[in-house]
View 1: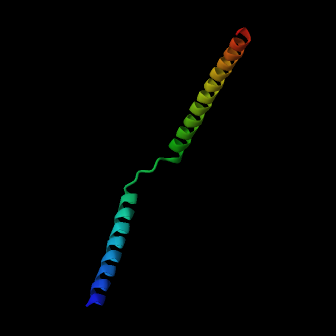
View 2 (view 1 turned 60 degrees about the vertical axis):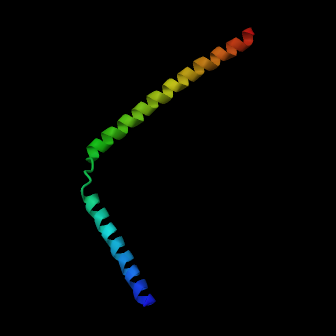
View 3 (view 1 turned 180 degrees about the horizontal axis):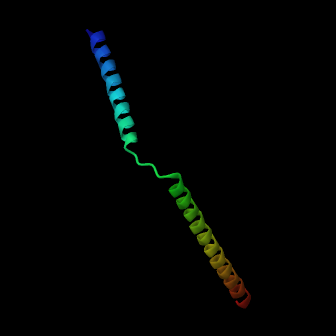
Length: 75
């Protein structure tokens, strides 16, 4: 009797696993993927914004470091 209970639990596990995989597959079909053109445009926008932010951070850092250096000379 213990073997029958084990077998039913194994079947139950596998049937639940396959049901989960089927639901994952159906959910993946519902995804609306962006077009390659929109993806390219958004990627370029992100790169440009990051470059601007990096440049601004570099300029601000340079200004502050010069200020600290001058302050150190004066003190």
